[in-house]
Image (cartoon, rainbow, N blue to C red; front, side, top):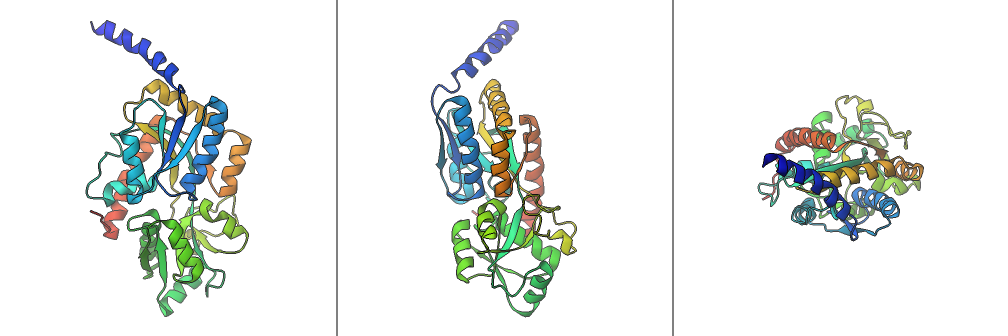
Length: 315
């Protein structure tokens, strides 16, 4: 009986894989348009559509720090036609930030493939009275400085907490409902600083409408080598470069997950995709599903400690 069951499973996996791409694929981005998740999803989605000869639709379902879109995907039919574009903020940090989630970030999702890692960057207006981390710290000791974020417990917020701890500063946190309004107030002069993903402000840095102070990664970005790191200012342990990747609902057939992973690997090796990622400040990251799952488990523990230290908590 057991042999028959195993035989049926072996036969069914190819059949389930054959059903994949029987209709358009939806990639749910649980953030608003214009951010890093959205930009990377659209680059990859276009190439997957060409490869699969099937429509790949990018759907933004923002809300509750990414939880709205994540919950939608967690409840979707596990056949590979609904995928989640996630990143360390919504997938690893929210688990510690929110007292109750309608889903389990590990058990309710199948890791499919990482897409990229990218540093965040600390930016200010071009007329800010500081150009370097050292000058920023000195200025902060003279006058109160504020930094905006996409909300309490967001990566943007926690990076500010980590910076205050490392540099001994007391930058005041101003939470917003998303990264876009925080950037609007930065440009308007209502706040002094924002930690944000490098892709989301790459154009503004290039045209001079924003001044980059430092990147959060341990090494300089190969795409923006002129921007120093926070570590270079003497805070050697400061090294944050979040990952972005795709998940499927739990119980998605292994054959389907492997198929998508392999196709994404092919896409990420495409010269045009690499160039577009690099132009955004992102570095391609290729992994197998099991490797991605291990990364998530590690980050759930690491960011849990940072959230605890920040005291941030959302009901």
